[in-house]
Length: 441
Image (cartoon, rainbow, N blue to C red; front, side, top):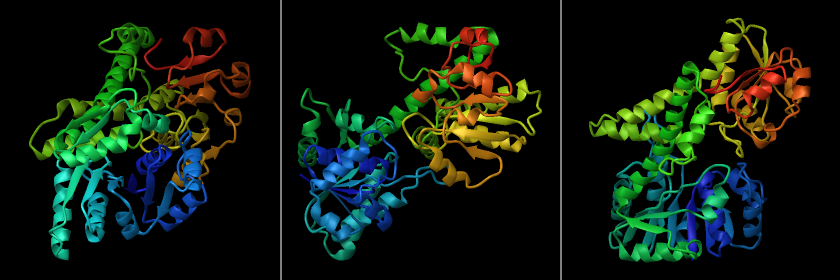
């Protein structure tokens, strides 16, 4: 099938590459000519395991192409994916200007029936707005005779495992009331449903809400567990034992119940805020979602509070080694990352940072530029030299079994603030460390 994808960001690039991998002819459209040219050369703008080889191989095979020519893209595709960004507006609601701009572009160039697919995460009612925009532009062209369907097909990709999630999806949500659109979408996704039918068809608005509901549920589990961790610290309980105790209940499970320093990234913070805003627009008080957001924002400050307390509020002139800058492992994404909250608080207190991350160093440089109070180190060991304490913010695999004797030797004080509970407190105590973690004595 011939497929067009508008937007070569995280969602569009992964989806386009995976569709090409199973044999579809995919054309990706973006307004940034520099990005398009880099992709043609095999230069991937984001870090995602397995994506680079997928893009290079399918581009070389002629199944995956990149262009800035929107007219060519509309002409090419039997289906038109809208996979552009929906950044939060000033009030927290999702900004649909890019989505609606693509809808206008499709309407300006279409000459036959089109299936327009909302792949971006969009609020309930967006499909109606896309439909209205296309209808308006077609009328302006004098082509109201042209027909089209608008389908909601939300993505459920996790950064760090997006390629695998896309190749082996747990479910494929299709929101449509059109039999023709459903038939085409089933054909498009047939290669991913060979073992069993993973397609779930529903009305458009339910599909739009499903995406938000899924992310908000996962965010709720994280915030709930962080609240339990804070309680455990005060009550003298061990949150890791509690986690195992409740995770063994099949109704709860072990996923997304790891305590830490709060969630970040491009999805959970934005989607929780957007659904709260949607609720406000219909005069509904989303009390649970507001609590989830509030707990998460506060949780990002807990590491700094522990550091500040340990050093009796005297952080001026201190240096801290930070391991982990991305909001989660296996990505270079620092959007809403807890590391940013921590570093900025340390800087405001007069401290310096020596940081290391396996993938997010360039992104850190892009965000903060050149500063006297941060040194980006080439190795995790290099970040330790002369630091007053080690702070672990992201649970990269490379941090799980370090040389603790070397850490102790290189730090000014044998002190570790572990925001991800990577080590055993008793073991750390025996090794002579002052060790702080989340929800444990």
